Image 1: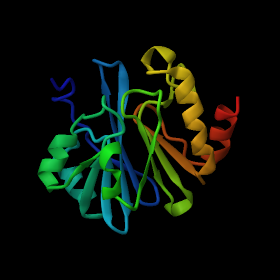
Image 2 (image 1 turned 60 degrees about the vertical axis):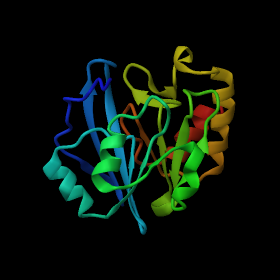
Image 3 (image 1 turned 180 degrees about the horizontal axis):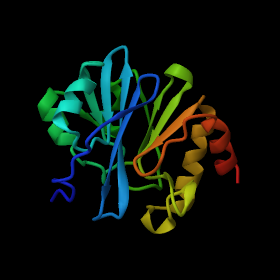
Image 4 (image 1 turned 120 degrees about the vertical axis):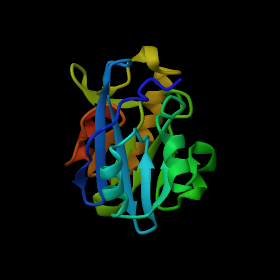
Length: 192
């Protein structure tokens, strides 16, 4: 079952140095689905990828050779298998996170099953979140609502580990990115 099988994002945009973003609205979940690509010296890492217009995907992979697909939780398979097959690259999740030494996968217990935050230290620090934190109307930048969490209080406690990171920007699987001063926003949210 692939609810967005026919939905294809038409374009990607550069969002920060070495970071690219594409999105599409999925009526089955009543939310925008966002995907992120992170270019490191090792190559291009796709995080929670959704289908992208083939011509634009070709443009994206000219930026760097694909090296891995990262899935931030058990609900975000999306088009991961398609990307893995297309580029002959592994799908990386919490269990096999040592495969990608350029990125740190940080477990977020209490969030949806197998939730990880993806951290890239380059260019001031980038964090990509699956579901534990969201940033879209009417909620704004906040925690995932309790009904979608495994254990809301445990999730909130485990998110505090992110305060140890240098973070200029945050990207979300659902919601607009925070492109500047994300560390302050994160501290304000997690400190409350």
